[in-house]
Image 1 (cartoon, one colour):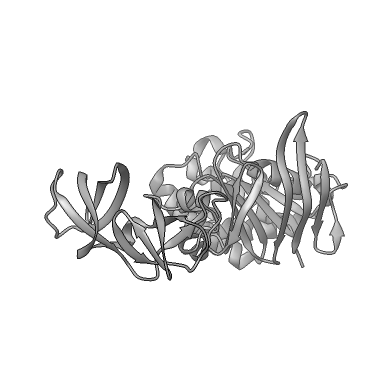
Image 2 (cartoon, one colour; image 1 turned 45 degrees about the vertical axis):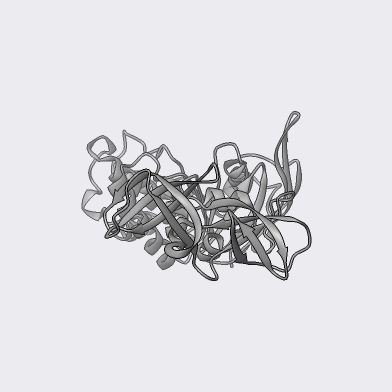
Length: 347
């Protein structure tokens, strides 16, 4: 079993606190994505699990072994990097089998594993080519196959698809998810790309300022963000936010419109809703369309609501022009509410 437990891990580089009290359990065979902006600590956390950096505080467990004192080679892990790290002077076969030969496995076992993983990654017809003859997507497949050939307990990936073009990333995402499910390997995947995270992950750990601010399924992170940061980071376009004043008895005034909300104490909350969860209505929030962007089946309408920018995704059959006044109402059950002081969700 390759369950990973990260217990109270912190990391300091001099006076800089890169990670703060990280606690995370990753189940056996789970695909966990660490998602966040540059500098949030996600790569540092991955490197600590890999053994490339040591934690300042805390413990890392893989299965029933504490591994934070062990070198990378003794942790039962394999890594895939952003820059592929494919050896140009070796054939695809020798690249995939490089780690196996370093572990002095018999030639027959090396051949079996190389051929199996090359087949999984659809590069078995390229085994005798050199890496200089391969495309970027093919080199990335070689890097993943080399990691899988080690039959690791855990595979760690640091933005492995970021150097590929958009269409190839889409293809590789689907392949990668299927291959890792078939190989029954526990995976930790680092990315700043929320689409990549949403499509690949069993769970997403959203990181900000060296902390995990929410760890949940992609649907839960999208629909029920635990913090305002998560709501603003996840989604394209992200959630809208408007101030709300307490009218009592579960009623809140949002831009002059009364909205059902939580029976929370205090005078103010932040009303939050995704652009696709707003719809035109005879009564609702008054807005002025500023920019109208046709997006195939939808219109992305950027509005002004009492001086605040607000976006709505509406049906492309609607006729809306810049400067036009529109009335929008939120879809029931899709509103989130945040405390303006703590930024934590209250409902």
